[in-house]
View (cartoon, rainbow, N blue to C red):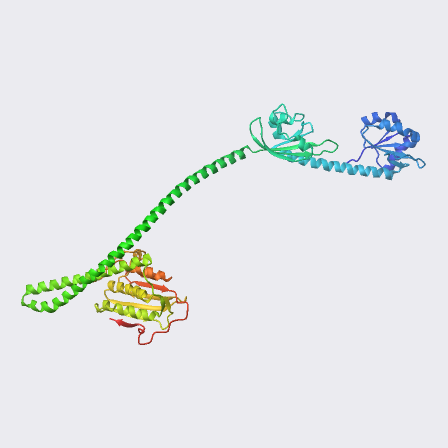
Length: 539
């Protein structure tokens, strides 16, 4: 920076030379001989500091006229007097004699002013660059709504340089102020933000107006406008989609509510029909038990009497012997089918009572070993009929007591053992029991039969489902398809589980797990009643 320019007014040449030498600023000091020529001289030669030696201009009496002549001249005046000169401090800066140090102080302050001006110009430059690069519209207006400055997008919108135009004309091509114009509030010091729709093209703008204080001038208004038309259109589409979605949801909700009512009515009807079915089955099965008992009893009696009283006399002829044998076989078929029908009726009755909650449960603490002994004894006849099939009971020495109805647990084990005997031609059926690491009781029925297909294992606990086993003994009566379903109901009532394991042709295992009783274990069964471990019970 070159520094402030100096102008020395008045005084002989020696004063100008002395000043130049003292200030060490040669070539930057200009001299004017007469005060009357100061305004013209200042207009022709711009100066930052006007140095006036008063002792060459006639003393204090020359001040009023000099000040009048200097009125309106944009220069800082420094008045220099000799040591004996005094003057009233009318805002004048008096320096004693040719005090170069004092003048240097003034010049230093002016240097700082110039640096501040340059810094301000730099700030103004980057702010102008920022506002010029702003994609929206930027408008600076004076207090009469005239545009002082606008960025490139404003020039494009106005179609010409907007400086000097009214803001409503430059922005909206209006001949009068906009009805929403916030100029009064903004010029009073408020910041105003709003959204407007331009009458020029119907586009929507987010507008923010801020008061702008400029040095030495009245307050201006800075306005930023961002085009939000696309955003508003997207919001409108979104709101439309939301309304459409809400309408569809409401319609779907009404449909679902109607369907729910229909399903509730259908469910109530099904519950009623199920109750009627259960009642009907219970009544029918109960009414069938008496005649079935009679038919089965008479069939056994007739067959026994026939074999005892008539068969000995059939040896007189081959024809009579063949007829006698056929009659005995038919009576045996009646007996077997009667027993199967009796089991089916009993299973129906048990299942209907379980599902309806009318089956009595006599729960108590039970020693599992005793239950296994009773179950093994109950199926003894099944295994006695097949000399090639053995029943083995494998019971651990210490089993946790369980709390349940022992008759129902016997029913579960008898069902599983009967199934194993029915589907195993030869080999071993093992009834086992042990305590798992979790503390639960595990009961197992393992056979050496043909096994069960994996697809059948998913359904064998369904009512009336019977897995196909190619190796099923043809002479055995068929099951009812309800035994395993009843087992599942009973086991799950006591928070237990039942599952089938194994696959063809390696036999089948049915595994039952039950939780232990909450209190201390039951007393162990005496050795005389506990089955021996891994010892065949029946063969």
